[in-house]
Amino acid sequence: MSDFNSTAGTAAYEPVDASGMLAKNWWAILIRGLAALAFSLCAFVLPGPTLVSLVVFVAAYAAVDGVFSIVSAVRAARMGEQWASLVFDGLVSLTAAGILVVWPSISVEALIVLLAMWAIISGFLEIGAAFRLKAEHGRVWLGLAGVASVLFGVALFAAPFIGALVVTWWLGVYAAVFGITMVSLAITLKRRLSHQPAA
View 1 (cartoon, rainbow, N blue to C red):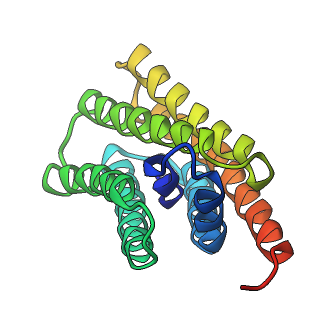
View 2: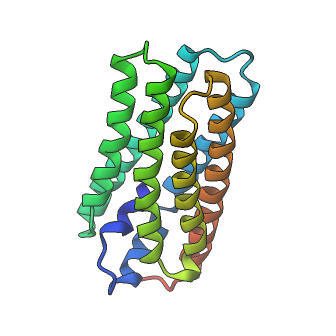
């Protein structure tokens, strides 16, 4: 669910390039984290959320997530870095957003299945990217984000008949955890970038 997945397509024997590419895009990761935290706040303060409002919020977040991934893919391609996984991740998010836009009357059960699939696919991409990231560049934070995404998806699959209000609360908790890990990763990457010698 993120541009940091650019490392997922990088060969295992190129950890320095992968970490460097990620560090240069720390600002995009920070924006993604702040967006997740904003989404979490809305999920908890929105009084009496309905299914329609939930669909709107999720569609908007997925669209932003997908656009940032595609933009990062273009930047990676221009720098000669791996970009295929970024495009894939972006398309997954944009597809989820598109489904919600053209099917605003989606049932709670269908929405839960869609969210679960989106979270699990993105989570595995993030975990794969974490293994190719240098430890000092925030591997733990990226791995935690991926694990949180997968666990959230599995939890949704395990309870497919919960109501819209409960889904909103679950989304709020997940978005808070994801946002904190992304902001922490961005801060770590910025610090590593500032300590790198100028080219």
